[in-house]
Length: 470
Image (tube, rainbow, N blue to C red):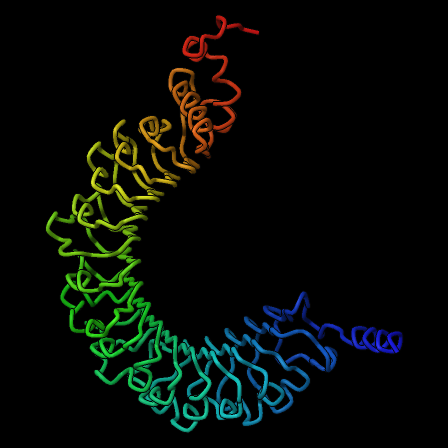
């Protein structure tokens, strides 16, 4: 009996072969970027196929007919970046996927109206129709949205031609994740009812690349919202971050992650002090060229803060008011120095990142108060020395990244580092420094372990016999 069963299984495996013009690996059928103008024949996969993902992105598909997915019970289907138009998607186009597909990506096509074929999908959970020329609210027919409403948990839409908000979104009563990528240039305000229908289910909201002039009032009704990304909406400015637009009245508070990147801000929004569950905050790409000491008010609870590319020329003293801060990213700013008192009021800091910056000087006492610092990322700056400030750190940081810096490796500049590295090892907190020497073909780590023990000062410090050229 076992022999018969084994033979049958071998026969099934043997019958499964990759569709023409595709490559197959693991559970993935990759037909992307192959200039397909029609769907491949999936019957070669066999009825017992384990392949669950189809990638048809970046092809020249224009039509989906009733035979397009015969024999293709995929759970995930990527069809973005083709030339599909709704009028050439037949009502039975997704036959074969009706009881299997859970994730469907139709983004970046020529679809002007949701195709009727979507009504037949019984299992679809995630749908992306972004960057299609869908201009009006009726581009999202209520009957189609209603048909998907019991299963859809994630929806992505938006394009620069959309002139009205789709009211039929209210049929997505199970929606947990909504991503809006672009709105028409004349859409500057969303109605308070924009998120009606999923006020209690939505956990994640991302709205980006719009001309909205204010954070939508309707967000304040999202009772369980945990993550808000309101990015690259440059017309917002400081006046558009309204306190009444945030979900502040619900108990317990839920909003943990907020990004307001590229929104034309010049200061920390006052609403932050009212977000009592706030953990991660990003204000990247805003012109925070000078943060006054009074610009952070109240008890802001964020532990992770990102201020990448904000026009800063120094570490803002106002950060000392962030009493819970553990992670700070100041990359791509014009910060040239870290003075001895710049970080002394951030004793809980565990990770400091200043990449791609103008940094060229670090005071010897700059890190003395950072007793919890584990990771120091100083990649691609103008530093020419391993920061001597590491010498006063107790305990030692686990990771110091100096990759991309032109580090001077000489006895005179690095004897202390060898001693410190040995001390850290003895204390059970080894310090890993990554980076390359500019003055010799060696990594910093290799120079410290191989060359420094031969340096005269090292031998004096360790009571080793006089320097020997051999």
